[in-house]
Length: 371
Image (cartoon, rainbow, N blue to C red; front, side, top):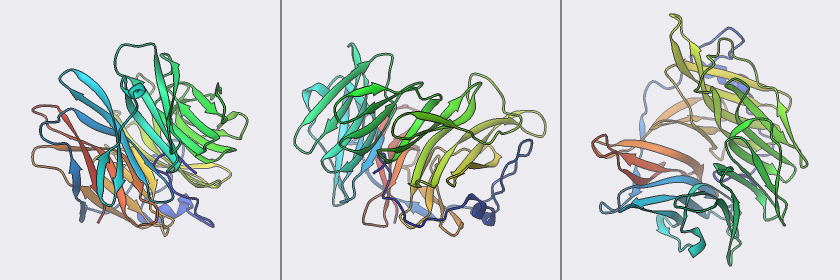
């Protein structure tokens, strides 16, 4: 009942952030920044299962959606010969195959995807050619519906709790689908990611104020800004310290990741990763070592989480034990994962994104799968 890469609620989950300390990660209090310690090196590699044909350059995947029956979709865009087109793929067995899209999808590329079943798939679409609107597309199992949204509202993430409940966010606003129509819903933060627990509970994370991490909660009627622990010394500037992703295991068990910009011991501004947890009452937050960052978080299906830090996938078990695994990448390329998710009904994690080279800077879509 959650956004793209989210899985079912884990009943009785007790993923308290305090347990993270067992892995050497300690909570950051105002004025105090402590380094995170996880596994020394990635011992396992996720193979590159599928990538673009060599002749098809300029492709990337930005969204990953899962349904309880094991159905998965990957969404993104293709750039070739000056023409931009959207991409939607569906996983059958271990093979990703292109899905035929309606003509109405042609002007767009997909930024995000969300689903609750094989007949409830939502796509956040950004205008790629000349036109008068961005869009949200929905597959109901039989046909496609396209909902246009103003150019001032560029959909960046999407979540759904069922056919009659969906949310889409842009850089500074949010809209809600009630089963009949979309309505603007003031959100109070600048959202970067959103996840749904139920029609009456959703979380958005991002930043607010002068570039400070921020969270907001949907109660079925409206959004409320929820206090986030202050991090002393946050550098204010054009680059915001923000939360970039959120995953809800249950109403009282929510995880978020991001990056904060703070001064180091010499006064130089450095980036440090953030790992945050909501226990039903308040948010807790821990910071990683200087130079670290986290971009995505997802369920492992067993009460733990996976987080991505570039081409390194970091796993935290329900008991708080950390380990690292690596994404495979062809020689001379860089792996850039954009989303990760557990395939329902399995223990297999998938990541999608692209690989690129410094020489060409072309992107080739990529799928990785855990062993």
